[in-house]
Length: 481
Ligand code: GLU
Image 1 (cartoon, helix red, strand yellow):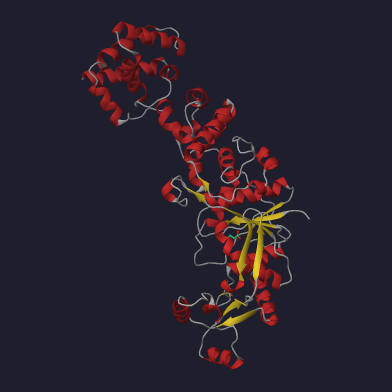
Image 2 (tube, rainbow, N blue to C red; image 1 turned 90 degrees about the vertical axis):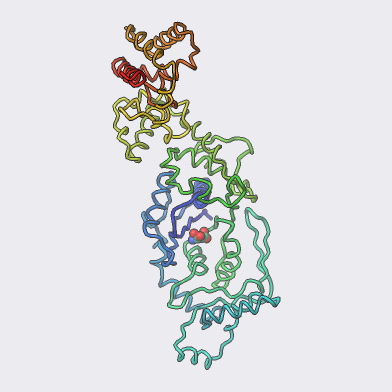
């Protein structure tokens, strides 16, 4: 049987790190087995839906290069892939379950349920409040209807026995039926719940493996019972552990970037993020870190997914991104950088000499987000960084250093990094200063900041005219003339 797996996000917000890791594992598993990756949007909960979320999810997946074979956008033989367009199917199944006696109408009000829950806390049957209407007589039903109450539909969960799940990640998990309660399958008014729509779509779409977050594990026995009541076979499951922040708390906004687009905006490469996320809970040999997408596809297996929580290590991601950036050739680096700057709306995206700056930054920056601060001022005239400029003004030696630098650079006929290095070292000797001390004011004069790329390379890039002008401007500021 060929593998069919799905990623089934609810459009209740942006695609966060945990969700995208699930999407990646689903996709890698499908590609590894030569199977089919399905994207299904679970938009039955219209109240919690966030506008634009569906587009955002699709955009994030596109950026990461996770192409799904069937989806709302590309369609496919099992569509529609938006649950909001599958209402009739849910209704049909509810009618069948009601007719079979596997589902029933429950007329409890929210207050009644709340009260029953409070009472049940003292008993050894915590799920009892969900079952209070399972055996209503026709007369009772008629009375509730007359009173204008509307019913939800609940599943009649067996009271005895247990459901045994052999999860591909978590191993054997046993669920006592008595504790599950009667799950709501359809809300009053006819909207299906996740517990109905999700397993039913898995059944109808021929899904062979459900790969999803561990937070949904408690839903699994309910969904398995439902599918079995419909005569279907429940898919294999793999429940992925949570991703935690470095402080071992569940990953959230507090830990920094949480959505895929934030990583894109901060200048990470999709290849690096994919590689990094693959290792958030999976490893190939416990050692190898850098793997291309092709290698990940070849090596991925659910057997090597770790059931312990994964820790999201920002430092490791930055390191990995740096590795990917360093591995790009000039043309690829320039193209990716240009794309990043264009997305960020930076005017530097169109800079004709962008490629010449690649050697200045490639070994230095871990993300494209750092590019601007390091060399942006070489591409355009900017106001200097206030703190750095103040440091320049406070430096008692600055006037002397800048004057000597102007004289030394003015003399040069060749203006490359090598010549500049020996000229500026000559300035140090002449002033009897260490480069560390003498180069501070020069760096601020040239780049407007204490943080910059290599000094000689920066001056060479800027060229003779502009460099001398900046040095003279700084000198005038320092001396007040
Ligand atoms: N739609 C569910 C959610 O986003 C996931 C369903 C699933 O993977 O089974 O939480």
